[in-house]
Length: 404
Image (cartoon, rainbow, N blue to C red; front, side, top):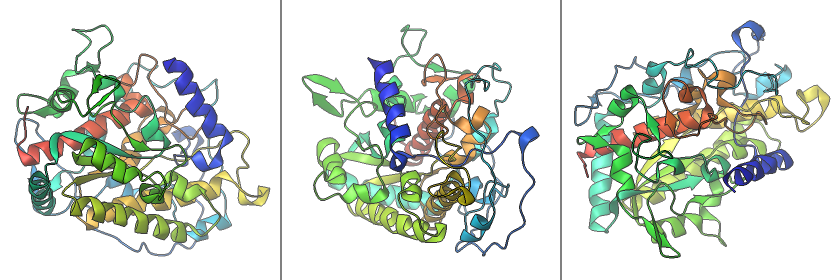
C-alpha cells in the first residue's frame, strides 16, 4: 500500500504539469555546459552572506550577531539564473534515466556533512528574539510547544517526508525504525535527547482513535498547490491546520508550482509568490506561531516536456529559471524578516542527481527508506530533506531551550 501510494503521487506529477514541485537539475561536472553570457539584472535583494561556523548541538543555542542568509543565494552556475534575460538562451537540463546511478549507491562517497549544516543557517540574535517573542505570544494563546504543522505542496504530501519518524524509535530497537549516524544524532540533539523524541512523544491529534504525532498528523498540503493555497476559501487549509493541531511551529514550503503554473517573466512569478508567502508569514506570526521557511529543489528535464523555448511552450528551461526565482525569493524573505530558514536547494545540490527522482521533478528516496540518515541515505533527496528539516526544528527548540 505504501509503495502504491508513492507510485500514485509520482504518476500524478507526470500527468499534471502544475504539480511540478522542484527545479532544474544541474548537470554532472563532466557534463556541465559552458555558462552563457547574458545581461542579468541586479537582484532586488542582496543581503550579506557571511561564512558560517559549525553549530554545536551540545550548546543550548548557537547565535550570530548578524543575520545569516541561505547559501543558495550565492549559487552562480549555468543553471542558476533567475531573470527573464536568461530565457534568450537555453541550457539543456540533464535527465534522470533508468541507467543513471541510484542515489546512495556509492556508499556515501558524496557525503558532505558541512553542506547540510550550512543549509540551515544559524539563528541570528534578531531571529532568536523574534522566535522567542512569537513563541511567548503563542503560549498565551495555548499553542502546543511539542506540535508542529506542515503547510505546502506535493513534496510535503509525500509519505517520505518525516512520516518515518512517527514511531520515535531507532532501528536498533525496532526493525522498522529510523537510522541516525552518530554525527547526525549529535546535530539533532535537544536537551539530552533528539528533536525526533521531542515531537514523537506528543499526540498531535487522534484519527479513528489512533494518536498521531506531528510526523504523521494532518497536513495542510496538496499536490500542485501554490502559496496562495494556504488561503483557499473552500478548503481553508491554514485555518484547518491551526484549529486541528494548534501548533507552536509550522513548516512552510512552496515555490515550485508558483513558478510553473503560467507563462510570465520569472521576476513577476517570484513577486506573486513572495506576496503570498509574506501573507502566510504575517498570519502565522499574528497567531503566535513560529514559521520555519524552506525553499525548494531544482527543476529537471521532465520526460515528455520540451527542453527549450525554441521548441514551444511549456518548456523545462523556462520553468527552471522561474523556479530559481521563487527559490531565491523564499531565501530572501526569510533573511530579510529574520525567520528560521532551511535552504533545501543548497543541501540537495551535493547529492547524486541533485536529489531528484526518475521524473526529474520530485525527490529521490534511498532504497532502504527516507528515514535512513547516514552517509549513504543522505545522498538521496527525501532523506536530505528530512535531515535538514529536523535540523531546522532543532535550532528553534535550542533557541527556546525546550526539552521533553
